[in-house]
Amino acid sequence: MRDIADGVRGLLAGGEPFAVATVISASGSAPRPPGAAMLVAADGEAIGSISGGCVEGAVYTTAEQVLAGQAAAVETYGYSDDDAFAVGLTCGGTLEVLVAPADREVLAAWVACVSADEPVALATVVAGPAPLGALRLVSAADTAGSLGDEGLDVAVTDDARGMLAAGQTGSRHYGPRGQRRIDDVTVFVQAFTPPPRMLVFGATDFAGAVCRMGTMLGYRVTVCDARPVFATARRFPDAFEVVCEWPHTYLTTTEVDERTVICVLTHDPKFDVPLLEVALRRPAAYIGAMGSRLTSDDRLRRLRENGVSEVDLARLHSPIGLDLGARTAEETAVSIAAEIIQQRWGGSGRPLAATEGTIHAGTGHAGPRTSAVAP
Image 1 (cartoon, rainbow, N blue to C red):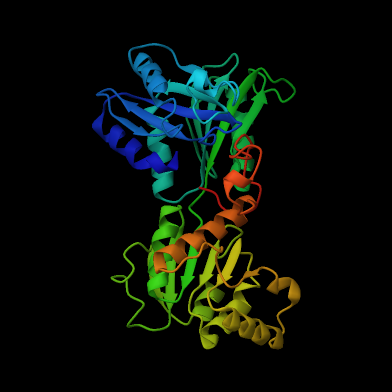
Image 2 (image 1 turned 45 degrees about the horizontal axis):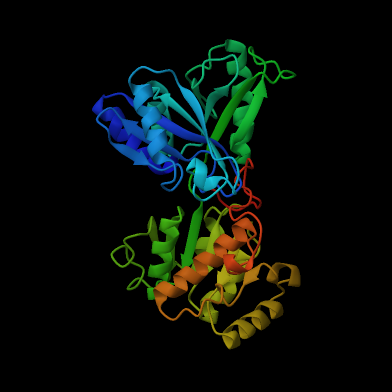
């Protein structure tokens, strides 16, 4: 839903009513995960996507009915991969979608939190004896909206803060007054944390392409280089920031967490070796370094001589990227992005045609299978 925050902001500013369709569960080969959302405005405009096109038309019709006064509704699309074409979900799998009128007050508070990079959760009643579609915002220090009962609000607020701290999205079950041992009411909780960071070292043409790719994937990209003539915002318009500083000095002082991705593209030992010594001591999700096999072997030798352990060296992806046969800077950026995605989700890196089983593995789970990112 974060990807349609600008759309929410615009519709709120316009003052007209709108409906929100949200994927609350997904299984099988369903194309979008829980939390994917689409907005339908009173003037007919649709913003966002919940299925990549498969069932948008049916959801749009339900949203029009909600805008005309019909109560919020949960619709199910798809029953099995074998029946997918019969029911309209052409990629297979099953989606459950909540369509509800927009709660303008809560969504305005949500937009403000997302714009300020403040971690925030949205809790929505999706089943049971509580107002369907009722919405509650929960941040570290504040709340907005109600799920219809004070006890339920208290219980959900407590759980939502825990899920927010863990970066989890998923469903929780309660009694009508928030009782922990009753599961009559289902509440879908979406956690929105600030975008993960991508740190790109080396202000090269390859860095520009990686920067564009990282931004597209939802990372907040920083480009860092010690050379002022190259480390300029004009050369990297897609970067969130451009830093002119010695790479290892910058990395020592900047924030790095379990979602951070580090791409070392300088392939110059005077930059690479001290930088990687620092990087391999930080809790980054991914650390990759560019260079030929000869350069990579020399770099590993230098790092070992400087006391970097084999355990730490095992975290280093060098040469960086998957073997796609890339030649250009843009193709290399795709190769690097592919390896980052593979690392994040635990994919095989093989052609899908050569694999078996569900394509979108894990879409029905509360969170990713690794500690890296999340959108």
